[in-house]
Amino acid sequence: MNLTAIVAFLLVTAKTVVHSLPASPNVILPQNLTNLDLSLTSGLAEPANLTDHSLFSIENCGVATRDISLLLYSLQSAVLQAYADSVSGVDSVHCFRSMFKSNDAKQAVQLVLDAIYHRNGRYGLLPAPDILTTPRIACVSQETVQIYIDLKLSYDPWQRCLTGSPSQSSIKGFYAEGTVYTFLCPEFDKQRPWPSQNHCPTLHYNQFAGDVNIIYRSYQIYTLIYELVQFYLGRNALDRDSNPPEALNWNDCVRYDTIYSVLNPSNFQIYTALVAQECTDCPDPRFAPFGPQNSLSSNFLPVNLSQPSNTLSTSNSRQTQVTAVGPDVSRPPAGILMFTNDTVSNAGVA
Image (cartoon, rainbow, N blue to C red):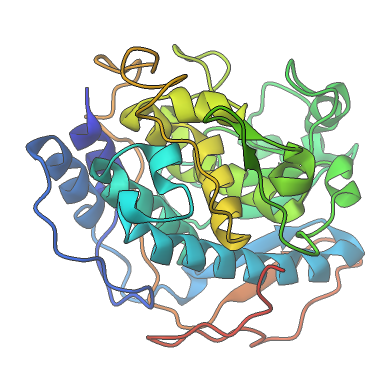
């Protein structure tokens, strides 16, 4: 399995419509990427009217709903910055080579970023697998397991938030695999929305050095980007049970080869943070302590991307909208953010 199949999976469900992102340059892709691109640009027919599918749905978050909706607008601005930077590929000064290794990854990276920016919908996910549905965000409480009983979760989201994971004592949020939902834990509220100023790593013997918490790990915006990447990669994303397992340490992310980098959500999370904060000190994966002899190569992928089960679709809506449900919800004013063909107006990431 190779990048061809990955791009094929990402494209398998999307039908190209007018986008407000910059057009990707015309490139001749290696044969192993062609199928991936084709699968993202063709698929099941879209509904004639996607208005109802162009929403960020925020559920059961109470008075936090407005803050989350504003965060999502800033998230789209950060994703747009990363997309624009990715056009330069390995010539980017903001660590594209560190995170994705080669220009072969450009198409797949841009497809994921494009999907987040346009709120693309997917088929095949609970609670309504036959309906094209965009990502939904829900805040976790003790009642969540009953509220979302139709998701048929094998765990209690409240307990999952409290007990954390092997890599973290507590978790800020998680994507519920096989569903359209990203759940936000109480710990999410303890994070800052985004950095108040730019924080960048330094280089030490061709490795990232610095406090990951003040650079990307302690901010809501990058937590949500990580979860949305998981939504679009689906079961193909690396995780703690995959072989190889997901890499969370940023230098381990540099060590992964091109294919594993595209399948590793943290690579997107870190890359977006580095671009948004204009960071330019980037490890070169071609040299020690990385390099071909030390990188984790993916001659055989541990996932099967040749038969994608979900379908992406791109909304042609020009306005980001937010739908909120649940008791005591504060709805944000409509029309806060407008997209045009060339510009995006938003409170950028500081």
